[in-house]
Image (cartoon, rainbow, N blue to C red; front, top):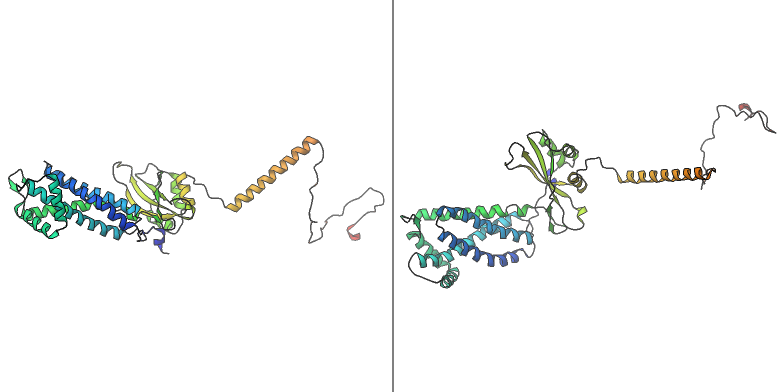
Length: 365
């Protein structure tokens, strides 16, 4: 059996408005992030804090890209990854365009107002050749130093720039990495949402067997462990469910994650054992609501209801007879009962009295 069908897989599609939405957002976001980052790092008195500023800059960029992914309905991790890396390159280029006039004004002794610096930044943005020439000059002569004694330039400055880009990349990817992998309903054209209620269950000794049973559509063991709940063992399982969007969700399956939680290490991050497993709606709701009884078939429910209704009618008839002191009305037959065989009497009826009756024996019948 192909176990992959029991896991959610991103379709690799994007909406027709994804790239347009991306361009509109980035035209506003990139200049603002670049200005904030360059001026914050330039005036930061504690150089080592620039490490966290670089990570934060990437995280802010990733935050906006994740919104583009969500509203642009991008279900392609590859497209999101390539787009994020390309955006980081453009972000660094815009940062250089902002950085060059700042260094020329405050380090190399050519004072300019903030408006003039913005004008120079725009000039460099549309003249990339001049940008690379200016960056080469800054790398050669440097623009800052440690404790005003050692100028940072050449290979050391280049190494710092590379590290800066890597830190931004880390911050951005950490912010957006999960977004394109989230469950998405292709039929309803919307994202699944996480259920707030989490289910804590007993931890099986053999998780591999449990996982194989789930992959084959057998949830009986999972329901059994859930009915036990969290025990005093060192580990327990935590289930996180994702429900389908909007109306018509009954036709869509649920998905769920399984995490292993260490009770002895409260602050430790739970270990992810399985992600985005498929589960039918009925079983998912039973787990979420804590209903671990065996499901009853719909036909059985209908038969039980009819039997209960007939029993109530019989009780009502008996009560009516008892109240009226009369005899119960004989049931009316709409059809004559059919006997396939004649009844067999093992003993002949004994009629000892009655006018016109003679003794009847089995031989005379």
